[in-house]
Amino acid sequence: MALTGSFKETPFADLLQLYSISKQTVAVSVTLPGSVRPDGVFYFDRGDLVAAFMSGTEGREAVRRALRLGDGKFRVDPGANPPDVSGRDALRHVVLEEVVKVDEERRAGKPAMGATATTNGSWEAVPPAVRAAPAGGPSPAPAHSAASAPGSRPSGGDGGGTGGGPRPAVPPSPPPPKSRVGLLLVAGLVVLAAVGGGGLWFASQHRTQPAPEATPAPASPAPAAAAPARGVTDSEIVLGMVASLSGSNKERGRAMRAGWEAALAAANAAGGVNGRKLRLVAYDDGYDPSRTLAAMKEVVEGQHAFAVVGNVGTATAAVAVPYCAQQKVVFFGALSGADLLRKTPPDRYVFNVRAGLATEAAAAVRYLVEVRRIPAKRVAVLAQDDDFGASGSGGAVRQLQTYGVAPGDVLRLSYARNTADVREALARLRERAGEVDGVVMVATYKPAATFVRKARDARLKQVFTAVSADSSGLAEELVQAGQGYTEDVILTQVVPVPTAGASALLRFRKTLEQYAPGEKFGSTQLEAWLGAQLLLEGLARAGRDLDTERLVAALEGIQGLDIGIGTPLTFGPQRHQASEKVWGWALKPDGSWRQLDLE
Image (tube, rainbow, N blue to C red; front, top):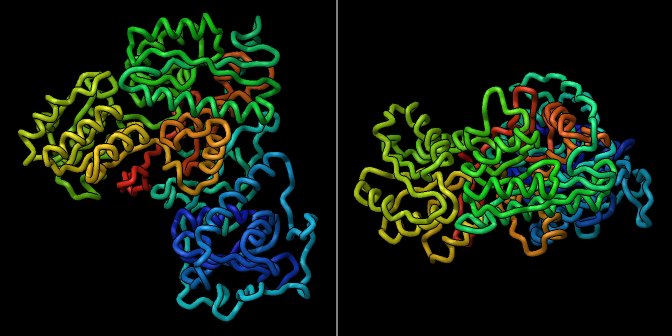
């Protein structure tokens, strides 16, 4: 059975991303307003757009016209055979470029078009008399095309979403009413978001949707500021960061800074927020909590940061958070999933973007037991010997308990924070190697990579999962070790694979290419970029008369924000963690990652 719908409710870009991420083979027929038969047909083969025809054009021009449609109808027929797949790589490149162009046009305020584009750039409805198939290509609705595809069956699924910088001067619009097809697509999204790592961008970059897990509550009115807020001038907002820019975890801190700086540079290029540009000052604490307080004082009191963003580490956060509470400074988007940042009720000035470590570790255990079919009693846990490790290992052990494993029966291995010395942990694993088939590692990338490498050197064959380790650092270490070291290495992450096709990820990659040339598309850079989008949204909502209390109120008012990662982001007075979503990544021999179904 075919699926039909309207471009007024579901843009063509959403269909592109839906079938790209769901890896389906379908044909999408396009009918312009006033037409009685299709004006175009687009063929997808296992997620790739391989042939595109529209009103006498093909390839890039056909894609360009379809992406700019604001009216008309579509029909999706599963299983339709594409005519020719020789141009697959070229069309994939075209799609990436054109989706980003359309997103930029929408962000610049250009209206959606209700018809096709003429060759001189104007827009008009193409009358039926001039519709023709491209030379050598199929007509828009040939006998073998989508309109009569044999073996059609109902389709559904999820896709990617769009992100990008905020539009500070324009508040988000409420979502329009959804038709039956819109509801069908949304229902498909819920299923595929869990496996594909993406979400559709249905109407606008910053659409709000109700979030069932949170009770929306009006933000408390902010008190009038008695004096200009620290770090805020007529033309600038200063943000601060304290991260591990040296030491064993330096790649994580460097990548976090790079992601935030690129996101802020893009926002500044678009005009900033409410007439102000943003500047980040970053200081190094070496992932050493004994150095954190001095660095925090320099950032807040010396550099006058308005808010602290993207700090790296759990032990360091244990020092930074009380200081921020004392100074009444927002502590936003730390790279830590530790329990100490997730109190009930939440600390007023602490806002988390990511899922917690316990949630990630539990997801890793479920993957090993339910997907890889490893008996729960044969799963061990390696954890850093501090609050970071305790938060993650606690989640893993509690999940193992649900499978009947007593906490005392779990093989627990550890190593010292800020080192890669895993010799003792490896020795214990070797002693009990015959009893262990899977290991959940709550470790930073360097010790995690060292542990896997030495285990493989000892000819151990366990499946290794790492909780939120830096993807770039881990992959580089294991690929450099040689052939076979990347096998059965899994990551749980709080972001989707950055190279996926969702338009939020396209914008992320374009931002890094433009403002951080040569920077890797890694998990940490993406987490930083996404955190920046959420903070920029809060700053925009807080308005021109900005202070800390207004920012807190604005952030708590964000409900169901869709920035294109496959899950809505929600804050509230009793909820200061935006996302609970966990994605699975599998390491490939070349050091790249593929999305993995954890369930």
